[in-house]
Amino acid sequence: MKLLEIKNLRKSFDDLEVLKDISLDVSEGQAVSILGPSGSGKSTLLRCMSMLETVDGGSMAYCGKPAVTDGKYVSKAELKEIKSYFSLVFQSFNLFPHYTVMKNICDAPIHVMKRDKKEVTENALALLEKMGLSDKADYYPYQLSGGQQQRVAIARALNMKPKMLFFDEPTSALDPELTAEILKVLKELAEEKMTMVIVTHEIAFARSISDHVIFMDGGVIVEQGKPADVIDNPSNERTQAFLKKLEQ
Image (cartoon, one colour):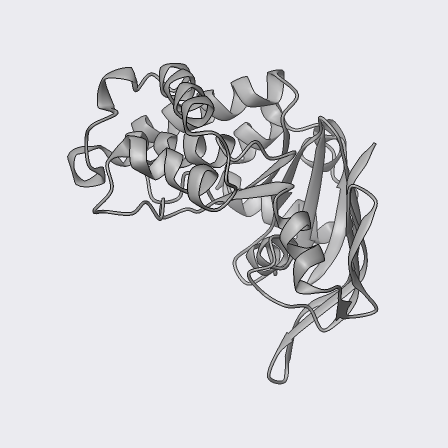
């Protein structure tokens, strides 16, 4: 089943066209990595997918339900339902500093989604255990390392029970040791067939975790396919040049 279908997506900031005619699909259980140089449009694409930015043209549908058709969005009520299908994990964690870890993870499901407090709390405790943070429930974000904060952010996203997770450079704010912690968590989620779209600069990670890799440059999808094709045997000159630069 296709959880996300994007056709001919366009986005400009003033006179600068950042996304030019982007089309892609994400199927249930897929881990999709989006690679590309700075300024290629990959983070803007993720922000459009997660509706933090509005698009200027094109269409997006989630689980077969249109969100945008020819640049026009559906009603607020319909968008609210569609937004419940996904969660976004930011590169800077975006935890509420004055909430404990537990309150960060439970607040939105209880107060926004109106889910049962007991069920949400039990789920949160199970997620903290899964993230290796069972002893941190009553801590505040400032008492945690960057890697621990990012794992809390992932637990918070998962406690929304989304069909799909979006990650925007989930390791860019972390040092190499903490990066390994987060990549391990994402790898486990991929093995559990959690549908994920990950904007990343970690080539080795993208190769090991992804079913599908998209390479963007200049606001277009230059190349996409299996990691073995796009990363190990790219056919496009721009992809080859980008990967070669990273190896130097």
